[in-house]
Image 1: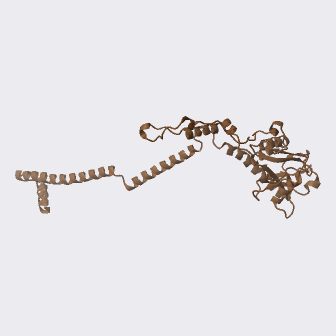
Image 2 (image 1 turned 180 degrees about the vertical axis):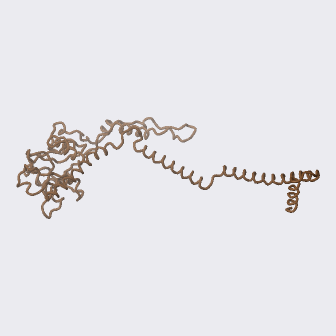
Amino acid sequence: MSMCFRQVARRTLLCSSSSSTNQAIKLGHNSAVAATTILQREFSAAKKKQTINNNNSKKEPTYQERKEAEKQQRRETWDKKQARLERLKTRRDHSPKDVKRTLFRSWWDKELMYHNKLQRMAKKEGKPWRIRVAAMVERLPVVTPDVEEWEQDYIDLRDFLMTFGKEYPAETGFMFAPDKEEDHIVESVEDLIAGLPFTPAPRETEADASGDVKTLDRQLKTRLYLTIKSDAEGNLSGPRWTLPSTLAETNESLLAAAERAVSDSVGSDLKLWCPSNAPMAVNMRVYNDKLPESFRENYFGEKIFYYRVQYDNTGGGVDEAAMKADDYAWLTREEIVEKIEEERGKHQAKFFHFML
């Protein structure tokens, strides 16, 4: 086959160079046509193969393209999942978020910077801190708190569904035989209370009506804290409302100092339960230069550790005969914050608000 092609090519070359003989021209013309046909076939096959490859490349992406597409799909799925989790936090895209946390951080960040500043000042002056321990004597709620309006609506709907159930079409066969009408009577709260074999105690007591703050039989729906009026902290303005506190002695634990602070202030009849050996909070107080030298000595100030202890109702109450404080009261958090704000300002009132 190669010999024939070479002969044809040679004859074609001779025909192109010599035009005197008609036979050579005719032979060269036929040979040129044959050669052109052979080249055209090879060109067409290559073109067809290239076209098939191009079509295959368009239909089936490469491994790298598939890998990038799968990666992009995973990224979009992850973004959608995170966006959904953010929406689930409030269920309302336009509702305010993290209101209480933002309010606390706006106070705490400044308070922490102020405490660090006091630490540096005390270190610079070379003065130590005096340790004071305060006790938060807490009476737990006696009755359940009042139900919110939305919670009461949910309870009513739940009771209705539990009483009447769901209704399905009769042809499904899911429904039981119809019950009697008296089986679906929903009693009101007043009817339930009237049917009890005893008379429930009132949620609002006489102490709430009269404003007596020296009894534990008040504000049954919330927590109460023992508050005393004393000048044991060395106040320039005289006695003020505060929590029972005392200075920690050598070789005495902070919890033991907290228990001693209560017994020294209101007597030892109160029976307390201490849930933890760790303090609830710590605050700093810088001694004023106007305080007596015998009181502040060579200390820069006080570090006050607050312990939460709970009142045990199996014990007694405040022993007014042995009480060293000027006055005492069982107050709610809101009432304590109000008194602290009147006597010391909003800064200290915020501390008691977040601590209690």
